[in-house]
Length: 436
Image (tube, rainbow, N blue to C red):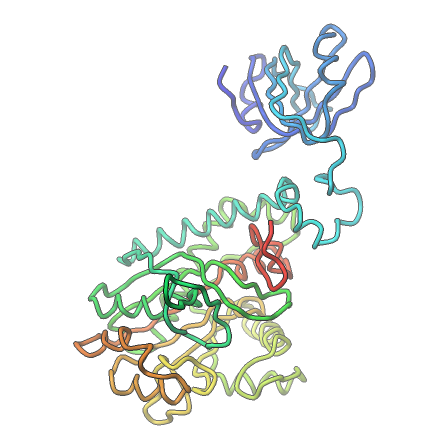
């Protein structure tokens, strides 16, 4: 008999079905036993009666989190979890778990310490509330991809190795590449711009990036996934705001429609589809506001996490909105390829998007003039030679363009109201973590 998911059992009362999954609990009362079985879609109670002594014998050897296949008759039972149960005719043990789990899958009381849970992440991820994160991620990414395609963007898959830096040389992972040294990419930025020079006009990419950032904060990791966008023939970075806010709205709408009730029930977070346009505020104006709110500043030309949170609270109070674009950052803190304002080169045509007081996106209009790019590379302290193949893209005509890159883990943090990137990452990589 073909296996079905537990969520479909309620549609087959009075019929025989086969289900498979993990044993969440076993209650053996001698003449009767109760198994709580869990798969990716839900849980169901299995009742083994004294009329099935051969099955009761199997139950006595079962351990929590063993994997079994059960065939039996579906009954409606109001007192059972979910209102239905299975009376089994066959139990097949597919994989027997060791009796002592290193971490509990069903937590009783306070959750196990995070580092230990990360050591046994595959067990931690068996929890339905953890699996929900990755179901949402799948829906979010599908909505992102479908929106990009509907807007005429071409998907690219750029190399994850490079000979030079896109952001800061101090945050590069260097690797041996045959007889030379290469680096893992911090961003597909330079490759996206090559696509603009190739005449693709609008591209997107979903892929990993690597940052050798020696940070232990709750929002930093050394390898993560980015959603990258680049678009030609924009008039200013404000055109990118228009595109991204529509994109974010589509992504969150898809999540709300499919998982909104489940997120609210499990995480107590009522997810709201944002209205557009999003609030927009210039960097120096935002700086004045957070200073007036008493937020601690760590850098004159950037925001501290405390300032970001304060600005998020201010925007929510004033505009009733969780999102805000902050634009026109000082040139000093932005990448060499960012375009500068003609009337004031100390200000760049760049922006961040904050979601609930957390930066989730950085973007900019890019400089597309060959000589100006060379000048900006030198001003940032880089040598021109490693950028030769990149610079060549601008020698033979390149349209004005710009782009941005949301990080999916930070979006998920805000969707679920989770304050640590480790909890929304499948297998986290950080300064001291290369396993599992």
